[in-house]
Image (cartoon, rainbow, N blue to C red; front, side):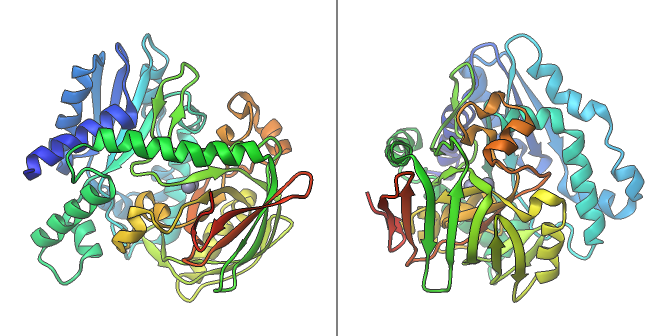
Length: 412
Ligand code: ZN
Ligand code: ZN
């Protein structure tokens, strides 16, 4: 297939399986101006599916850098209400809305700028969009994140190639790991989703109390699970029953740890990018759910900054299981982006948990969720901790041990 044909297939997959706009629904697309061609391809598919309107919010990464550098912090943190209204006005109106984020992350966009400023601006923006974020965090609307290459991103991943070669290599890698290369991503994803649902449903049938994760690198972590936790994965559903995939690609089955019942040591197995900089070879110790010690061979200060964001940042809100056979792991490429990298290995997330990972959680208050053990924070940062020899044993409430992962793979 030609590149143009594959691109069209990728757009079909992102819209049909990813965000799945319904007849009469508004599709909001967030996209950088440099990816306008992909936004247009997605809009075509959405209208063909009966979308009421496609509204595109164009951003400009290079302008974002200029703005971050040249704007005063108090101006950056004064996020105007119209930005949140640009989502809520559609979500609250007839037919409702869904949102597709087309990203082409440049991991070094803010390199050399004041890290604290970048951090504070990001937190202010997230806080100002809190009401809208509660729509996506609670799966009240379909939402999906899909990535397309950019020259700076591709060059970061494939140094030593020309910009054009790097972009071509990244397109090929994305098409491979997103199951687009063979020309039938919609079909291949239906099959993949069915398999993930089987693993997820089996975990839910076990009613586990905790899991124990061990690897030869020194990871030895007992993760108590939140009360009434639910394993999620593959697909999500809105209250109306509209299915969607929040992250493309996805290989994870995940749930909510109990924020106060995590104990032991966990080692990072892949570099992790936070605010554009790398944190490598970290080691984190938990006591009663809280990080008590941490270190990293690089980015240790940055890791400290992340953990000190707020009280919840020192606890975890997600545990996700990903087999080493994942196409992202097999591609053996560091994408410098969580969307892909988190799907290469088992991971935990510092910060907020997803309400949908406990029974009835999406209609619970923050206090009710905390009572179940679901963590709260303004951050949610996934860090990779799975290794090729990872063993995971689950313990049921009546004390039975069940093998879940053997040598980095699903044991059932
Ligand atoms: Zn995850
Ligand atoms: Zn996560």
